[in-house]
Length: 322
Image (cartoon, rainbow, N blue to C red; front, side, top):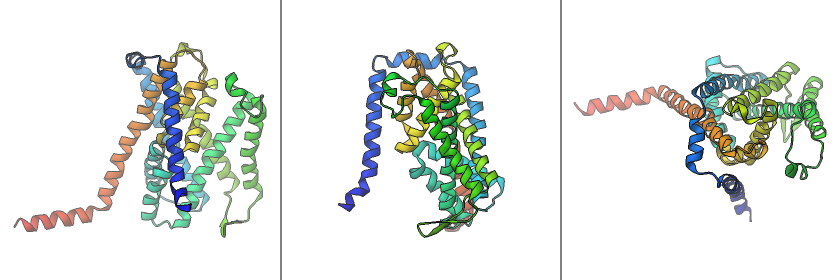
């Protein structure tokens, strides 16, 4: 039986992906491809330009994840290297998933730079903690102080009918991590390893960086929506946040289908094809273009790292021609 568990994860991810695509098709089947293409063409160049600018700002903010993780494990690197591994790692993670791509890329970079296995594992763990502290804290604060309108069919399936109660729980979970970092200064033994909580200033910086990251990414998507759709940014933000959390939890590469389905379901509008058109532009701006840039940067870095091998190959080719 054990050999079959190895295939359980990929099968579940594939099933979630297939279900998301099917449900997405059910939502969009009343629209033609021509209608969706026309909606994409109606998105102004100015809004696409603002989205591109916000994408650049957001990816600069993402450098804070790796920077803080390095500080938390008491390691340091030149800023250029931190920016390189952050951009390439985050881009690959967004498009292929943290397990399939992001962690592998970071392992490649950090191992070359002299980090051992334990240090890389601790660093990747801190990256995950940074995201969840920011996501839970921001989601909790929104539900508490600016509760969004939850669709009736979704609200009836939730364990609580008042989202402010859920918001309080999420906010307290995020705050508990910050309190632990303030109180516990000794290492905690876990699975035979000592785990050190980061100092308070690093923990609070994690929450701030992750929150700003989510807000900037949501704004990158929001500016592509038509202004007359009647959805405010505060209404859209929790929808975007829940979509991103679902993508992380399902491990579907790039969240394809899952992200679009949740955004369409939680964005209260009858202009479904217009929102979907904005989602397609957002995928191009936030996922595809950075991925192409990251691929170019990674290939350039690998070529530079192996320049001696390439030069030797060139020399042998030149000698053989003589």
